[in-house]
Amino acid sequence: MNSQNSVAKQELVIEAGRTEQQYWKDLWRYRELFYFLAWRDILVRYKQTAIGIAWALIRPFLTMIVFTVVFGQLAKLPSQGAPYPILVFSAMLPWQFFANSLSECSNSLISNANLISKVYFPRLVVPTSAVVVSFVDFMISGIILLALMAWYNFVPSWRILTLPLFVSVAFAASMGAGLWFASLNVKYRDFRYIVPFIVQFGLYISPVGFSSTIVPEKWRFLYSLNPIVGVIDGFRWAIIGGESQLYLPGFVLSLVLVVLLLVTGIWYFRKTERTFADVI
Image 1 (cartoon, helix red, strand yellow):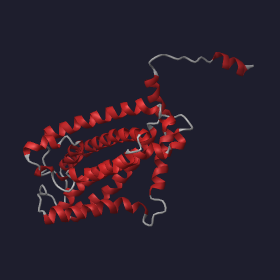
Image 2 (cartoon, rainbow, N blue to C red):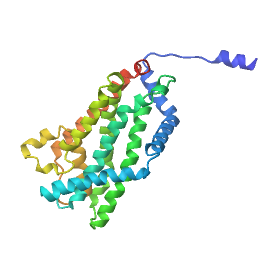
Image 3 (cartoon, rainbow, N blue to C red):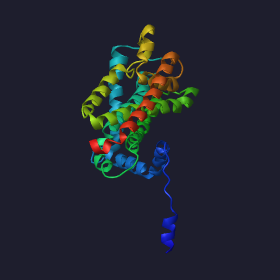
């Protein structure tokens, strides 16, 4: 009898225009699913590999050696007053984070197709957990930078305190680009081939192996249309200090592009999200 009364008293209120607000509340409500997906991906990432999580250290370390030999020893490019391996690795950190996030995000919805097609939850949880997993690799790779600083007896200046600001910009760029490609990959599977090409091509056109100061002054603003240029320059400014200078107009342009990328990425993801279960 009591249960019948309680059911009778429950009211379901549907108000127009509250869908968006409810969606963001749902994101918080499904936070345990977010933790589960992120933890699952971290556990399986290096499962059944011989050296496990050491792959997160070896790949950027070997790339850093190649770039140091080619650009530092053979091409004799300037190093902004810092040892060349530190110059390279201070850019390798945000680039690896961005590249890994882009690759993992673009495939995240496809690899969780069974989950998405069976139950409701805010789909934004899936690509966000993929970026968080890449951030774990980013933190592990940071050990190499600390080791390089100790090896070369390199002490960063006060600018290192601003590094979290540039990490947040890198996170926003990774999230924005990842949401775009995750959404597009659901409908157009061509993007599973396009994304690796973008990652490979982007490594060479971004100032990872060299300083962006070698770009002629008249082209630097145009070069900053690549949003990762501002992120990398910010990391170097914070980590290297000293002679490293931030090209402010280019950094502001990159920052605006990153914000635009994030906002439009969320907008497009939300717009196409309702069709994922049918198309995937």
